[in-house]
Amino acid sequence: MNKIGVIFDLDGVIVDTAKYHFLAWKDLADHLGFEFTEAHNELLKGVSRVRSLEILLDIGNIELSEEKKQEYLVSKNDHYLEYIYKMGPEEILPGANELLNTLDALGIPYVLGSASKNAPLILKQVGLFNRFAGIVDGNSVSKAKPDPEVFLIGAQKLHLLPEQCVVFEDAIAGVEAANRAHMISVGIGDAKTLHEADFNFNSLTEIPDNFIEMLMRKTAEIQ
Ligand code: BG6
Ligand code: MG
Image (tube, rainbow, N blue to C red; front, top):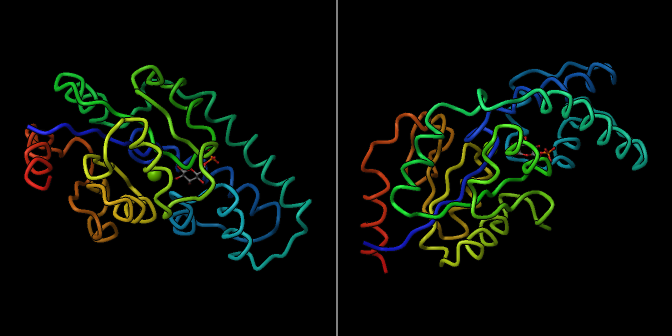
């Protein structure tokens, strides 16, 4: 069997924070006087905070000074953090703990590869921070997903080649980043939306028991 490592996206794979991003962005849209729907919120998944604000302002057809943008980025995040500080282990998505247990049992290392600058805090809130061999977050990258940078740094932290890394992602931009990094991409969520992924599951609970061992054999064949 070959050595592999896993890189997890955070939001939408380990925890569902999209609902809190939605509430905080919607509050800003209300303040600016336009409607922001859950469908609009889909466009922000996997996207950096700064890019999220740009998309939001495009939806509202609003132009702002750099100074105002900075002000809203801070106030949106302050609002978002009010929800994050209330999070606990009960918000870990179904199947995540079981998958981490499987990886531990097989001796497979895993790191985080997230666009969020709040990723370390969120992992601490849900009690998973110490389980990860490394964290790559929005503070460690200069280029956002779909650029592969976040996952390539993850591979370095795992001391593995990109081809030996498996990425779990719920966002189109994240699957694209994993594919551009020449990693094995596993889409978690709607298979039609994430059709570019190498494998698809609706949720982590649907991953078969032997999936990880199958990937170990598959990467051994490739190398
Ligand atoms: C990603 C989310 O994980 O993190 C995006 O999917 C979010 O919706 C991005 O915009 C940045 O998050 P944060 O916590 O740095 O504002
Ligand atoms: Mg995500």
